[in-house]
Image (tube, rainbow, N blue to C red; front, side):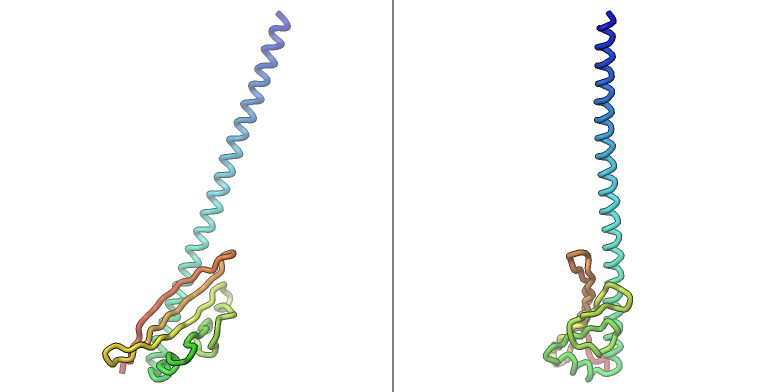
Length: 153
């Protein structure tokens, strides 16, 4: 009788240990899932914030080029006829006529402007495209805004 109670006690102890291991396994799976979910959520939030900022910087570039058109259409037309009509406009000026190797001050973003002269019914038009790039790990994302400009005079 004593031996029978001892075997029963060992089986109950083994069963309790098994339940503990299963419960710990489930706990680890739940925690891993939560960490993964939080990581993905943070990454998506960061991407959305950067995309919003990039679009704002691109729109700022469009507003600047509209102002340049209003200052001197003929200068803008000359720039659009350049052999390489792409400018780095991180500082919103015509000083950098090349690939952007720098960023907008204190940011991860770089902004470039491309001008393309077209004509429509004897009216000169310039398509201005501002592209803002930003790195995200091994990937470079961008936000692009375009506008067609014409002489307002």
